[in-house]
Image (cartoon, rainbow, N blue to C red; front, side, top):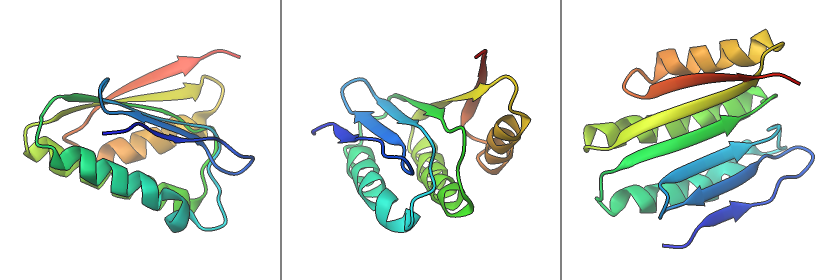
Length: 128
């Protein structure tokens, strides 16, 4: 299976999914005009990856300083897929990286954690 790489733009994050490293990375601001269209290749890639039935630990590395409501919904859909994967034997670690001065980013991660109780979250502040 090939890696999925989508370069960042002003309104979309960098996406890097590496099946060999079991690493899913999303970094950058996310407010595309059409979040469903932007995230569709991500969902399709993840669906194919999870269908390989090779349960491992998946590391999800997120650094999203800003995301609009439709991107937040897309992230919730991603987490639902990962929650289902946990039921199939996968372990999922979510590294939520946030600016230590940005309480909203931390709160967003904590809300998503509440919606995905079977995923393990690690909140990682960074100082500018």
